[in-house]
Length: 126
Image (cartoon, rainbow, N blue to C red; front, side, top):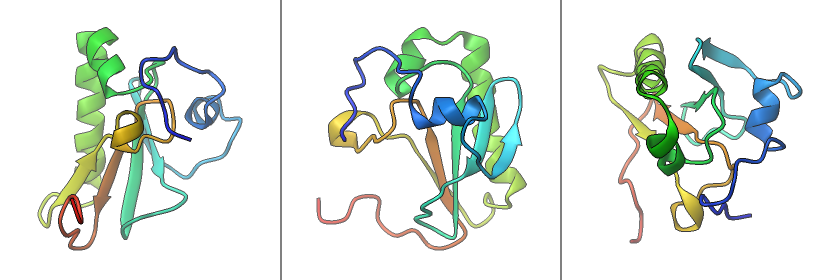
């Protein structure tokens, strides 16, 4: 179901449940600002999701409401995961979907890290 990023945060979303350890995940990284785990439906040989620990619906919500510390911590976590997985030298893609047209499926900000293989064009058939 498409996500409306203007709606309030919904504590029943799957990523909120993962953060509360109500749903298991394959953890890759965790610090005070972010939690990273393997995507259960990988779209590349490396596909990791990085989510902030705060209650943010989308990148837009996060960029508007998060503190400078939260933003810096989250962005650093994304970089840490990419470096830790050895993706920097060969390259990787970091992507955050926002809203219906952006293809957002979970109402909690998340950055996809794709790598480990050539990824091709960003948008096919646009």
